[in-house]
Image (cartoon, rainbow, N blue to C red; front, side, top):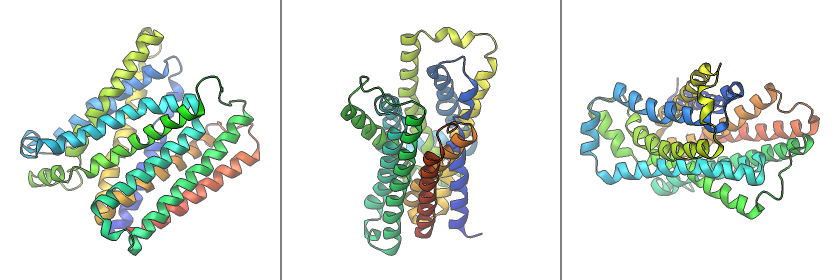
Length: 336
C-alpha cells in the first residue's frame, strides 16, 4: 500500500478515536465534569506517556541528556500552552455556546496547526501545487467547521439552549475562543518542533513508528500540569471531591481510563500517520485529523440522540458541513 494512503487511513482511525473519546462521560453521571476530567488527565497525560515512551524508546534518559535542553523546553512549553488552552475552552463554551466555540476553536487550531509548519519549514512549497492544495484544504476545513457550527447553533435554538447573554460578553467569549484555538494548535507545533528528539530516538534503536513517543512524553506531561491544577481547583471550588468515593462509581475510574486510551492512542496514531505522509506530513495530517474529529463527533451526536427533536433543517446543515470536511480531506490527501 502506498505510504501516503496508509497515512491517510491511519489519520481517519486517529480522528475517529479522538472524536469518540468523550463518549464514556455519558456514563459517569454521578461525577461532575472535573471529577471525570481529573481522572482522565491522570490516565492520558500522566501515566500513559511515560509508560509508552519507556516501553518503546531505548535509552530514554540518554536521549534527553544529549538533545539540547532548549528543544525539550520548547516542546514542553507547547504542551503547557495546550493544557492552559483547555481551561479557556471551558470558558469559551460558557460564554458563546458550544457550537460557536467549537467552530472557532477547531477552525483556528486546524489553520494555525497546519500552516505553521508549512510556513516555517516548507516556505518554498507554499505556492507549489502541494502548497496550494494545503491552503485550499485548510480553507475547506474552516468552512466545513463553520457550517457544522451553524447547524449546532440551530440545534441549540431548537432545544432552547441559547446562551445566556448575562453570563459573559460576546467579545470576551471570542477572545477565549482565539486563545483556546491557538493553544490547541500547539500540540502540532510542539510535535513539529522536536525533530532532534525523533532523530535521537531512532539513533538509540527506537522503531520509526515509535520514535515520536520521545516527543509526546514532555509535551503531554507538561500539558497535564495545567489540567491537573484546573481540575483540582474546580473540585475544591464546587466541593465535588466526595463524589470520588460515591457508591457504584468504581467503574467510573475504568471509564475514564478508556477515555485516556482512546485519546492517547489517537495522538500516537496521528504521529505515526504524519511520518508516513512525507515531508508535508504534519502540514497535511493535522487539518485532516481535525476534520475527522469534527465528523466523528457530529455522527456520534446523531447516534446518541443529541439532535432528536431539532427538526430536519439543522441536521441537513450539519450533513452539509460534514460533506465539506470530507472534500477537505480529499484535497489535503492529494497534497501528501
